[in-house]
Length: 140
Image 1: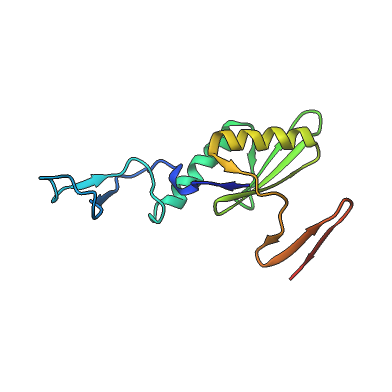
Image 2: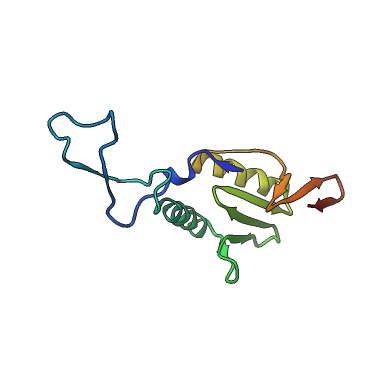
């Protein structure tokens, strides 16, 4: 899944000011700066703000953060259903052992973060991935 505006969904933890963009200056106040309330794409703080927002969401919704890899989250239900999520820049890679849990998670992410389902993974970190019904092939 891919987030439409990942770096615009995070709130800043510190005060950030920018100069007024060309063409958007406020008449008679051209010398003033703007205070940002939310992260802008390209802002150094944007990835941290995005990660903070999605991390809070996962932790509030019953996920456990992997102690060895900070971008992996796991949710285990009492009946043995498991969902594993990996954050990758502004996207998610996830797998499960229950198709309903998969669909419920996908719909929750679409609603909360304006994500789009881009289908099965085909590339990851330079590795080509092809998924069949009973096996997964990976090569460079």
